Image 1 (tube, rainbow over the protein chains, first blue to last red):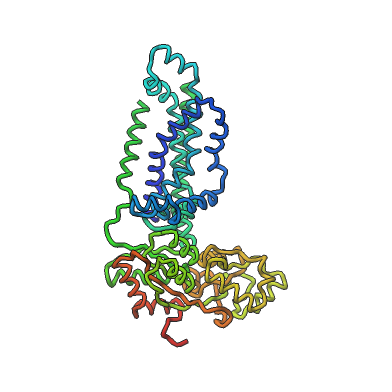
Image 2 (cartoon, rainbow over the protein chains, first blue to last red):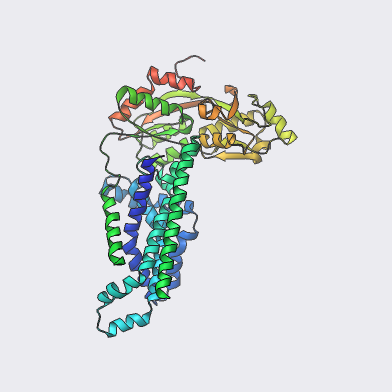
Length: 222
Length: 262
């Protein structure tokens, strides 16, 4: 069992959730209430990482973050480390590919709150911020939790993008999914089997958790 | 209530940010190595640790991919390529400290998994027969586009006059270690891989092999190089790979060493 790789994956998953959560809530709520003209285009762009092959995303990230690009150069000048093949680069890539997993459930959650309730809160003299904090957020809460669970689970399983922008560096970019691939190539089937079994368990637990959340919400509504 | 719990969860997740792996205390260089060294270099690193107490982190893959990643700024301190060209490219690109050192010369073998209908015949005679009588469905080599061992395999198949016929039945490994895995896992009748892999205990229990004549292909002159920014441990490891102890290990894995006859 490659504990370093497992710890790295868990950390990457947790940090992706931490970074995406505020962005996902702000963006998801905006999408839920907005009526601007280009809304469907914005929604389509948000969903893009769902259908785009991971290698395509990986390629563009490599081209966009590499040493030869202004962004890659700027990052290096400011942080002192390159962005590609580092944990930070992996985190940025992970945030980008997880946008739909975070934004879509949150958007549905805020849509379900309904305009009538928002209007009612406003007519009772509640400030926007207070209504958001005391009414909208608690109602959308199960959806937000679903978004967090999905983002975390998807990060653990991400392979293609990590392979392309990560470079399989132990303790830095070698996630558990990559470690399994490496172990198979090293003819170490026993280690690959242990790690695969663990990922299977984690995935099962995640799905059970997200179903549990959905069912509780259903009961409350019904 | 639920809200507060989740805020606590988010706080806990944020705390893990502080434990980000970016903070590296000791000098533990990351070393990129051609995947034909998968088993041999792991032993060399163990011997290095035994002698000096220092650790290196090894990562294996295709030399071509590593060369590209290094040019893109991957934080490796040393690179052991399976051929010379990639090291020269890195020198030209200005990321290598010099033109490096020749550390080994590799050989290729045909491997045949136990129970395959194919015979391990180094002159590829049975491979030619198997192509004609339909015994051969799949044959594994490393991707010739970026893996040196794949390029040498292609040259050997061309030398034997089999390339055009076998092209459609090839399965390509991303690197030579994956090619060996494809060749021995049972999905293919065999493959052409690195001698060093065929000699490892992991592969030799799954398959038999035969050496392919070394004048059938360009030599696999394997060169290593220190990269700009390499620290003290990387320099020590670079020296250690050229020491008698490391040379003995490389020899056990079938490498011909520079300066040795044969």
